[in-house]
Each structure stands twice: as C-alpha cells, then as structure tokens.
Length: 188
Image (cartoon, one colour):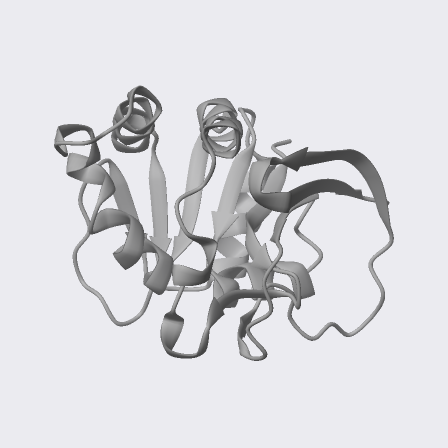
C-alpha cells in the first residue's frame, strides 16, 4: 500500500496562498529548503494535483531547467517534475501533458485505488483536492514548511474536518529565513 503525503509551504497563520491566490509571501526558498523539497519529490512515485496547483506547476516547471538563471537544484527539479508520473483531478480542464493523466470523475475513489497499489509514496497538492482526501482519512503524512509571515486570510492548508486526526511528529527542522519544517504521520 502506498503512502499519501500532503506537504506545502504555509504562512504562520496556516495559509498556502493569500487572497487572490498570491504566493509571493514565500519568496524564493533558501537553497537548503529547495533541496529538501527536491529530495521529497525524487522519493515520490506519483504526484496528485488539483487544477489550480497543476496550472501553477505546469506553467513553469516543464521548461524550468532552461531558464537563464536556473540553479542546479532547479534544473534537477524541472527534470524530475517532467519525469514523475502525475494525475490531475479536475472537471474544468480537458487536456494535460507532461507525463500526466487527467481524472474528471470521483477523486476519492481514484486516490483510494492508487493508494492500494504497490509503489513509492504519492504526493498530493492543492488545497481542495487535499482537503477532500483529508476528510476521507486518506492522508498518511503532513509536511508543513511554516514561513514567518502572516497574511490574515486566503487558502488554508487545513480543511474543516468531521473528526479529529491524531498525529505523531517525526521531524522538525529549521531552515534559513526562519522557515520551520515539521513532518507528521497520521496515527492510525
């Protein structure tokens, strides 16, 4: 059975984006934090995206390795992003590319099916998609890279839940710029 991991950069008050889907608060990550995310992506066998995150990622990473000022880690991230199989869940787009499959039907049923397969861990991204998986009890691990900024409102990392989810902290690490990364496993 595959592990499902939900991880993102988050403001200290719990938002992945400020009002208007603004993610400018995170600024460019430190080299160490970027490398940490790259290592996580390399370990993933499949990436699951909601529409908004897919549009953000696919607007840059297919050619991110060809940007004039791309760092070696960014070059590797772009190559890994292209090579990693991806599934996009959306009922409003009709085409995806870059080693990606589109699912327009029941996301929870498909994620449950994918989790039952053998293979490397899967990453899930996008607040709406991850929120649905959270409510269905499908998330095995949460990764929160908390940035020292408050935005007041926007898109929250966590969704409303019907019941508590008990977690075990498995890692805490501080990165330059005061970013604190915490990793939690779901207690089952």
